[in-house]
Structures are given as C-alpha cells and as structure tokens.
Image (cartoon, rainbow, N blue to C red; front, top):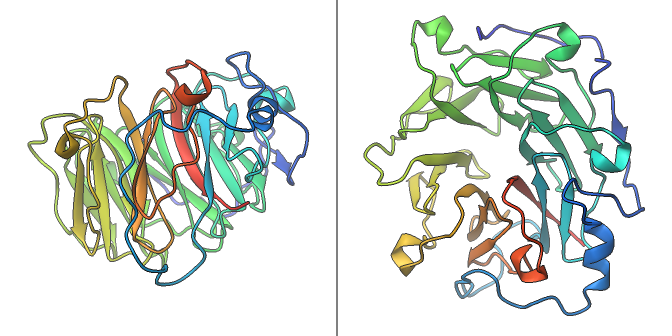
Length: 321
C-alpha cells in the first residue's frame, strides 16, 4: 500500500456514520449488552488485573479522565464506569464487521474513531467523518492503525507496509514505501500534537519518524513482540508497549511501571497503552479486556471482572463521566 496525499476526499458510503451520544444500550458482537450490562453492575468485581498505586499530587494540567471505553473487533464498545462516555457502537447501528483494528479518542475524550483493516472509518460523538479507503475505492486489507489530528478534523491511517493515507486536514508527510523502505511489519502510528509529523512502529520495535517528528529511539530486542506506540500529550516523547506488557519510554515519556517488572505474565496479549491527560499514568489494555492501571490512571473495572470472557479487544480510549 503506497502512501499518498488525500485531502478532503468525498464522503464514503462505507462509513458515513456520525453518531452524537446515543443513549440506548447497544449490542456487542459477543452477545453481551455492553452498556446495559455495565449499568446493572452496581458493584462490579473490584479487581481483575494488577493496579499500581497512583502518583501523589494533583494533575499538572487538564482534567484527568474518569474512565475508559474498550472496543472489540466487531466494533462493540464496553464502558467503564457504567455512567461513562458511551457514544455508540457498530453492532448498535446494525453494522456487521469483524475487522476493527483500532480506536482513538477525540481531543476532549468525548468521542472516538474506529478503523477497520480495510481502512473503513467510523466516527462517534463529537468527531466528524472525513473519508475512508473504501470510499475512495482503495482495496486493502492491511490497515493497522489510525491517529486523529489535534482538531479532530482529520486523521492518518497506516498500513502494514508503512503506507500512510491522510484525510481531512491531516497533512501527508511521507510513507515508508515512498522512502524506498520495504517492510511488512508496521503495527502502529502516533502523531505530533502540531500534526507536522508522525511515528510508525514495527513489530520488532523499530521506529520510523516522518515529517517533523523527532527520532527518539527504537525498542529493538524486546523479549516480546511490540503491540503499539503512543505519543505523550505534548509530543515530546512516546511509549512503546509489548504484548507482554513491557513499557519502553522515549523522549519525555515516563515509565510508571510495567507487567514484567511486577512479575505479572498476562494470560492474554496486551494490545495498547492509553495515557492520562496529565502524563502521570497510563492503562495497559489486554485483548481480553483486562485493565492494568499505573500512576494516576484509575481502575474502574474490566471485562474479566464482570465475568465477560472474550479475546478480541483491540483498543481503548479515556473518557469522562
């Protein structure tokens, strides 16, 4: 998949879905009413994953998220706590897919984008749909990630070969095929807050910096495959997380702990790291919906803690009640 600039493409039939804060309970593809089930759980099981004591002191800036949403490969969304920020799901819209690979939040954590392996994009809450690959009649099946622009009016998609597609006000800043770099191992993308650069990460921990994104280091030689890359809120660094829950900070990113350092071997692979807005903590997300909270990130429940047993969680976002 060759990256190329795409500016304000036509709205796509595949994903012209914008939902503003649906309030009804929606069905996840596992046969569990995610929102309704959570709402009935007045006192959900308190612990299903390791929790690290929060850092002391008030957040340095911003308002810390009070919960998180998880998404499965079918686009079903699970909300923690039950009164948290639920803005819709694909099963709730009658959309049947099994290839969702990513979920990213809006700038104020009051909406989210979902992306499928075919580059289909779905916008919920306070974000706008700006186009998709199926809408451009681009036929791919190897999209690995999405990251929005700072104002939520655009986003970057990345394929497994490092091809980058830019939609809305996201500027195209290059791709690995365009640089003559041949790889089929890219598994994630993160962007600078000024939208003038992005980082791509491969499964072996190699980081590629494009545009004005600074090369801050790679995580080569990790004992477990890399699962994701997440930039710090100020763009001065990034975390790389492995499937075993190892956390590798670069630049101004700070480590608040990792699963191997705690002697914890997760039963299911870790699929992502979600930072809090004040850079004082983060959650690690397991593919079973297990939550590991570090620093000032609050633990407010998990799927195993609710007795929900799945293995296809692919992402999460922070939310506010």
